[in-house]
Amino acid sequence: MTINEVIKKGIYELKENNIDEPTLKLRMLVSSVLNKPKEFIMAHGEYVLDNSQEKDVMEKIEKIKENIPIQYIINNQEFMKLNFYIDENVLIPRSDTEILVEEIINTYENKRVKILDLCTGSGCIAISLKKYIPNAEVYASDVSKSALEVAKINAKRNDTEIKFVISNLFNDIINKNFDIIVSNPPYIKTKIIDTLSKEVQKEPKIALDGGIDGLFFYRKIIKEGYEYLAHGGMIFLEIGYDQKQELIDIIKEDKRYKFIESKKDLGDNDRIIVIRKE
Image 1 (cartoon, rainbow, N blue to C red):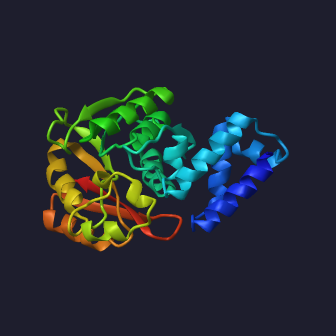
Image 2 (spheres, rainbow, N blue to C red):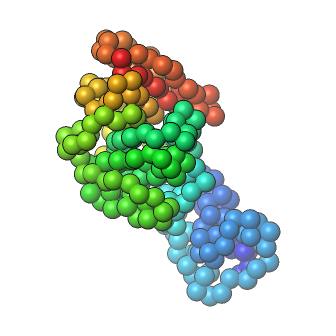
């Protein structure tokens, strides 16, 4: 079959199984199997797949039909114009998180800073920051050893030097005086997880579950992070679309920080919050 034929057949099967974004997923899949850029897939629809390639595509279509995220099937996701290896041990990087990374880059570009990325998962935040702030000294931690193995693969893939630490938040973090603590922690309310899409439910629950009210990790980071920040150090947090005011209230109660700003994502949802150690 040609690229166009296999994509057409795949789209039909995915639509029959009520899979969202079938065209995008098929293009990503064929691009991965052929090891060709997406531009090639769109411009060369008459390219003929060999038998092995066609078989590979059709087998992976069956996985998509099982609601396995395409990123886990092709083991790849682009983030901040970098490519990351992704598997079922880590949360899939999303474009919303780029807002968090871009804010830090815009604030500290070309500066010599010390950064701690908590709940690093795939390492996409830590690695992107090191890539775009070369003078930064970057530490990345996660409670999951499997997640850190993925992050190490990505650091090597993107030619970045990151200091990795297995730690449940600050428990095993020895270094202090960080200029920046950044985190995209689990922030979904426990009772909400079972209502999420079938694809999202395939992602690690440990990377989604933020406790009863979704704020468990934020409280810990804000409470304990103070001791790990340098004077005037900043905490940058990704947040859920409906958590801004609750977090501002937590910060005001703490009184050791100054609320600096919040920013929205491209969907006009509150997405990040920034505070400074006073």
